Image (cartoon, rainbow, N blue to C red; front, side, top):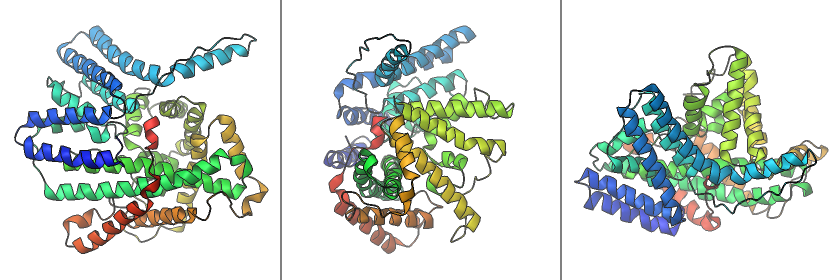
Length: 482
């Protein structure tokens, strides 16, 4: 079920009514309702995959209980290994089986042997990359004794399957979300209103920005050999804002929807395109995944402790693994490698924690130096996004090569260029709004509790109007394929 669909528009108010008017007095009934409606939400795509999420939930629930009762180090390691094997095994089979078979066969051709690659017709379950990481982190935290296992299966199942963030995050930690299912929840009108505003803003980023940029990005990327340098740059920009509007829009809708039910999800994006270096960018982009790899891979490898060489090695490992997490294609691995390469100079200069605070805090505009840093970081991000979007490594190389040609000053041209002026205008509007409200999680969040209701109503009515006007090209969320 898509957030930007008629089905969800009918689904949400029904669930909201049942949650607050039927089951509000019984916490266990509320949690059971969340599990049931979350399974309906997930099963809307393909009910066959409900067994997978139920199996993953059951395995980590049992592993968690066994770990909490077990003191023998060897048995505890075996239990953790069981969780890792099950979760990564499911993810590996559905996402990477054909990739490994095809590349294994290709490797033999280098030595003059021809192998028949017998691949399978495997359908990738929506959200499997997200909920497997969520349940896996639960088992790891219990193993590390940072978390106490729960015996309430319904509450645990609600934590794993909570429908707003089930299929594309944020990837929640049990320490943050699970305790919320054990506390009595009361309807908070101001929190619900804030949630609705964030949902509308997320819809704007998805429907108006991402979906309209997508159609022009697709045209240019699919026919990149036919276009000038300036057109290729515009195509890369379209995709850069498409993926941001799509994924951060999903996160906003998820967080806002959770607020309607008295639950708080973690922030997943924090204005990454205003970053002054790549290290800052990755502290602001897909935060829940970045911190997951930091806590469960980077730090166990040694993190930034030890020599500079080991720090660089660990950085390359987490970025390449992160790239591979996105999909079974060498372009994602190259994308991860490229981002790691970007960070090497920052590590060597020991400035990876230089830009922590929001840019130009308390000021109207950034300084000249900050402006240059933002533009340079954004340009590097755009080049990396070309690799991320390309169909193959060869396509990425040709596309980037096409950007650096002599016809960069030629006027851009592609099918639908006149219509795309509106999409460009909406991107500019997004940048302006996010810049002037950059110290808030979404536009005018702080003003919701203040006496500025008329202004807020006008602003969000206009945003809703834009969603209605530009909503004809509505598409599935891009991160569903990951």
